[in-house]
Image (cartoon, rainbow, N blue to C red; front, side, top):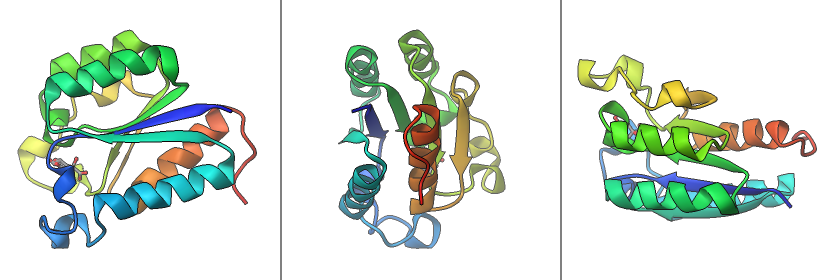
Length: 149
Ligand code: DQA
């Protein structure tokens, strides 16, 4: 069974409490449960992580290189400036989809750029919890699993 790793970056542990008008009312636990449910439906093995640390995200990406077939990554604010995470994604060589709950292109100027997107297969931004689900569907097609019903 193909394995997908999902990494939620900084402050995403605060979902549900944090600016719900921007990020929605779902908690991270609920997002992970939805992802697990959808992964089961698609026949994918999934593991989810959240960390606030840039270095920890890099460590997770480095170990995913051996253990996973695809990566779904919400780098949070690191998206906008972490060249170290960009390099880790690039070095891992895993098919990677960058995900954002909010539409980063319709927000403050400093959020309108991702330094990581250029080394990802693609980016899904602005669909709330569905950004993750759409990313999982993209991964499923990519890894040649049955298309979603
Ligand atoms: C975010 C967008 C980032 O700009 C922000 O710093 C986050 C969340 C999103 O999912 O919409 O922490 O990545």
